[in-house]
Length: 191
Image 1 (cartoon, rainbow, N blue to C red):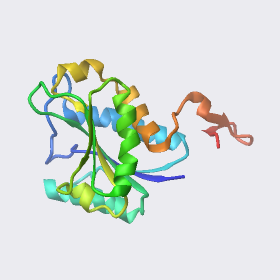
Image 2 (image 1 turned 90 degrees about the vertical axis):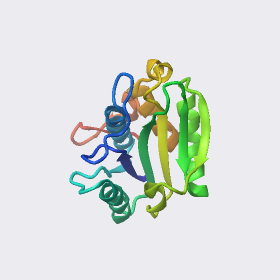
Image 3 (image 1 turned 180 degrees about the vertical axis):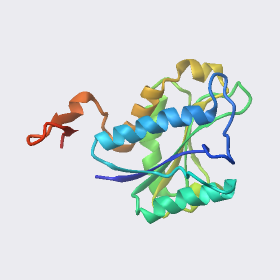
């Protein structure tokens, strides 16, 4: 199983994210990130939530995110975000810095665009701290544009989380993904 570092982007006192047409970027990020974490765990993966609880500045927030992923020796780092521009731009894109990251980004991008979002493609970025400072392959997901009515009409947190998880693992979590433990009856992931 894979150890995922999930970074709900922004979401600290020093970084409010973008304004959206119906919800802020921070609200959308948390809706999707919580579901991604839950789904990955249900599939048997280890998940480290990299959102800092007490950063002293914007830069400190970014450093704490990458440091936590590195300290936990995660296999893959995934930062979840939503774009904003001028209210007219729309679509999804996934950012990467390494070839290993690009290989992880491609199926995530494919699954999100299957939801009907315009495919803006994969984008190489070497100027983002969380991609540069992590020691494992890293991607930054821009699910869609939170300031676009076109994207927000299509947006569904559950479907977005499912697409991200399927892109990362090749699997979709469903209730049938779990079976009862033979000893205690608690639901556990199927192998």
